Picture: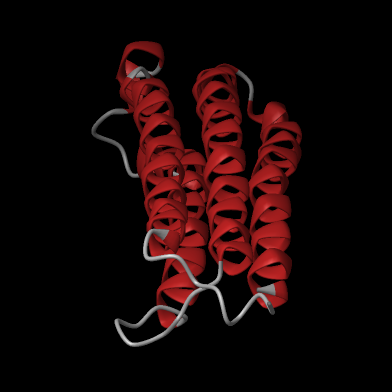
Length: 167
């Protein structure tokens, strides 16, 4: 009996679980990264209260928003994989267990690496923004470490796309 001939009724559950894992875990990582980095940005006022009403503080705030933007991209990675998985689903299709488990693996890979990347970006963003307010030479190092944290999520996206293409 070929794999496509036997398609259990519960097989789509695992594909939907992959969609949920990609969105929930990816968004949780992005939310943590945004919240933790936002705490650092909020602390800018305590470090440089003399610059709050000056134009130069806006430049520092824009530079400080880099970790928030980078953590938001993590949620986009989960969204991309969730949409790609959902394209393979329809009520009339007979979905094999192999395909369903590949969808689950794709969702978990992008979702769990999204949590790791969001955690990394949040910690580095918080500490980096606070350090940048005290010493501007830290900025390049902070950006490099943030990029390395973002790459964790990108690796999960690549693996998720490869797994989705094999299903």
